Length: 338
Image: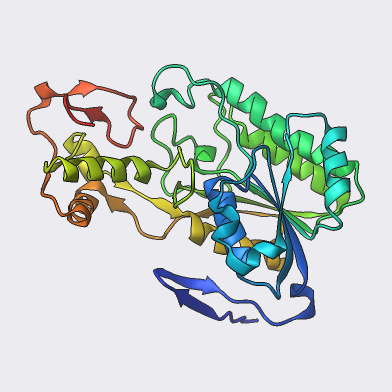
């Protein structure tokens, strides 16, 4: 039997889902963890823009939101409440914070992430896979254990992971990747124990689950250290101020290689659709913006934004030094380039 859905456009985003005006899709309550981050913040924006559908949004994070968090939501901020919770604390303490502040939960969106102490350059952020797996597995398992100690019962629990599920951070991976692909077990990956913990919780409680796996995520948010577009914007601003061209800091292999990205706001619209669509329950989804790109195509656009000329990669390979493993977006760096 054929089904139909109405989609709409909003600014640069197209094909956004709409929802029928049904009683079961009104007066909903959402709980968003990691709400200060790039994904959590944009999810809050999307939910807060629909007051009839989402009457209360609880935002959980260890740190208080930045000053602009509530200001940018405008009137919708009255329906958003921040609760300071450390998911590395004991489940009983997490449960107590939930009992004190939350009356009901219809849907949970889990974006919490903790970076272990970094050794070396920024490119070593994920080098200690075991440490990352240990701390980030605890974030989710402690929260789930705390949730079990309350009377709160969500209908759907969405966990966001990412493309590292398929091993893209370790070397060439199967492309395209399918949600049914086997796990890559060459090193620890905290996505896998997180998924297992969520599956167990949902089996015990009767909640449905979703796992969403975006690609490189971009979007505007305070302290967005994992957003590579921020670094490129800073580089462009500096070169513009110095009246210098935008030099590409890699080789032609990086220049011509295809990449994809996942815009945080578009991810958020999709994730709202996922939890509100019955047939999408208990499913994992890959998501990205729908079209790949190369740095060679993007670089002139970036330079034109700052009104400066640009240069392609240096042709003389002797001027390069190896700066990272193959998966770094630029592969190599030439002396003197940011």
